[in-house]
Each structure stands twice: as structure tokens, then as C-alpha cells.
Image (cartoon, helix red, strand yellow):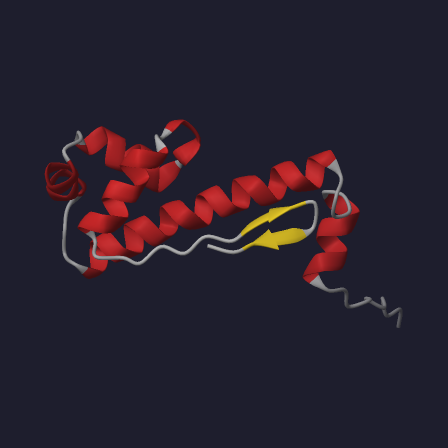
Length: 107
């Protein structure tokens, strides 16, 4: 009987192989898109935990339901000011980490 052997690899190894190593343009684009997606998911989760519809949250923020949907699904075109208003309306605390030339800036 023939048995195939599988090698276990980490998620980082898979991403390095298929997307590119850290610091490459393709990897940076991938990680930025992932951060945007996670931010949108955080908005959606907080909204659902507060039993708000997209329309209700939009009313609290002063934007249309479509803008809330865009933020939850793909924030590439959302204004930073609007995103901050959404988090404020949800009672969320937002913390930033900014790194320039491998040095973290303190806020």
C-alpha cells in the first residue's frame, strides 16, 4: 500500500511561499488588504452586538446605509473621518500604532 507523506507548514510559511516574503510589494499589499478587511469585520461585529442595522448605524453617524455597508465590506474608498465617526457611534476605543523606518511613533 502506498502512503503519501505530508509536511506540516505554518501559515507564515504558506503566505511566504504563495504571496511573498515580508517586505515585498505583493506581501505588503496583501497585509494592508487584510487589515482593511479586519477593520470592516470589527465594525460589523460591534454593530451586530449592539443590535443595530446598517441603516440605524448610518443614522447615528449621519451617512447612508450604503456607506456603512461599504465600510463593513471594503473600506478602500471610505473616508477616515467617517470610519472614526462609526467607531465613536459604536462606543469603541481606537488605538493606532504607527511605524516609520522600523521605529514606532508614540501617541
